[in-house]
Image 1 (cartoon, rainbow, N blue to C red):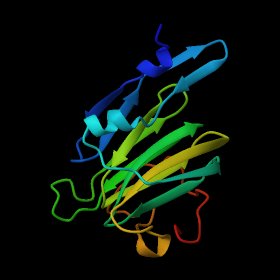
Image 2 (cartoon, rainbow, N blue to C red; image 1 turned 60 degrees about the vertical axis):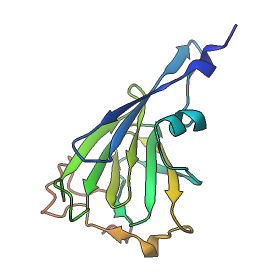
Image 3 (tube, rainbow, N blue to C red; image 1 turned 180 degrees about the vertical axis):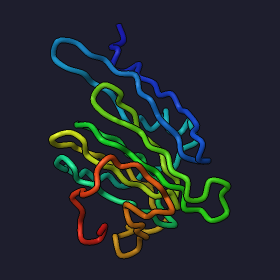
Length: 176
């Protein structure tokens, strides 16, 4: 008999920002907890998604806001592994009909999904739980892109009109 863990599939949903996609996962839960997959190479190839080549994780505490960061080269698949976050993505492609528009998502332990971001889409998140673990799966067209090669938009830029729900987040020097 084939184990349910091997039958997990993805659902791909478009958003109002072209190229930004929500990926919902099958999961399995029992009295021990739950299990789900965020990457199965064959499934991603069927969806025509980029080849990923780098994983990063961040741990953060309540009211930490990371971002808004983007670059010309990197596709990202972002997931809240643990905790409750407000995920925000911003279209920074000047030629796009949704330029400087943003979408917000609440991602937590009860609605696990990932957001696929193409290059030139700003990525940011705010931690609403006591702590969180956040996963970036990255696809670089060239070598590793470090922070010095990325663009940063101020988290409270008035032209974006993002409703974060707090006025004094915990920020890195770069994000201030």
